[in-house]
Length: 149
Image 1 (cartoon, one colour):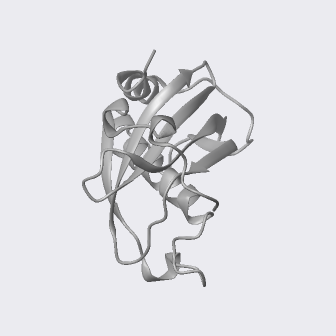
Image 2 (cartoon, one colour):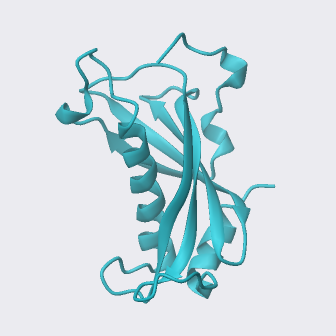
């Protein structure tokens, strides 16, 4: 995980228009006593899909169009461990015709400084053929609502 990065490099809570509550889980800790790096990708996926379901009308079992993650990255700033309350910030950094790039950050407790932040890209595809398709209108509207310049 390395040394914590300087505060100036850490995104703040207010940089994200959508927020969600998360919690660490017992299984998230690794043998070093902190949440393992790969777990942050699960947090990212959770907050983005929760937003798509609640605000974009995504039906994860039946929607004819789904989003597949094709790229992701994460920077780590400070450790967290179980049991700890987390908050996630979500925004759209880039909204294309068939893909969206999310900016996501994880915050511990009431801190305004991210413990980790990153991105991932969803490409929207036809569920059956897995070929890329335009982002459905309702999902696009929801994504546009949290887009940042």
